[in-house]
Amino acid sequence: MDSAPTNGARVRILIVDDHPIVRQGLERLVEREPDLEIVAEAATADEALGVIDSEEVDFVVLDIGLKQGSGLDVIGQIRARRDDLPVLVLSMHQERFYAERVLRNGAQGYVMKQGDPSEIIPAIRRILSGDLYLSPALADELVRRAVEGPEESRPPAEQLSDREAEVVRLIGGGMSTREIAGELNLSVKTIESYRANVKRKLGLRSGAELARFAYDWTSRSMGVTAG
Image (cartoon, rainbow, N blue to C red; front, side, top):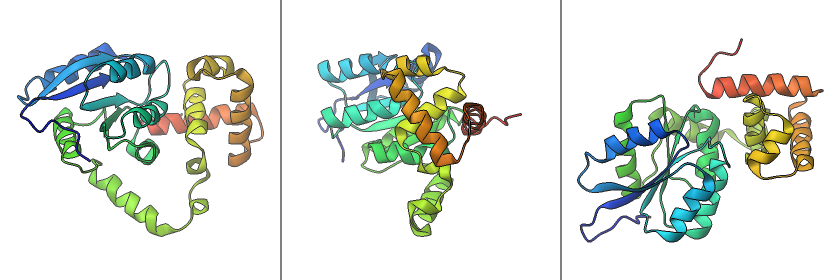
């Protein structure tokens, strides 16, 4: 897959991130490259999809943790609109917690915000050449997982669906069931169902145990030691 222009035109990039400082930092990196340009920015899922529907875009840099909507959902909706449009996810979360889910949803790469900013341009170029971009450590881990056996042999948290993982992430961020429902544009009853599924899969007996697990899991995914 390579949707980059082939006629010498610059690659048109959309940045999707709800932090203006992050968008400005990416702008400074990209503007140094003579063959790349940022043609649009978006802070929400709806804004991003609106740009993709109305403008010519060759590449998307996407934050997975949007305040309005889910980055995982955005990847799926991009695939439904433009199956050839490459997506690089830029995230606060450690690779081992989210990168495999991101790839399954159709993105082509994963870079952590805490990493070296100089990693971003090579990641974009590698994806434009038709390859995936992951850190060497994560690439090795995914190969190991591929030969380990069935999904059931993995830790229970890795058996959560993408939506269940999103709900856990938001619980870990201190959001209530009603707030999560608003964030994901779902009903309170649906979020309660996801909470029940998570408790069942993880063997948690109460909402308090779920909240503690969610806090610990979210903290670890962001490289923070939970106390």
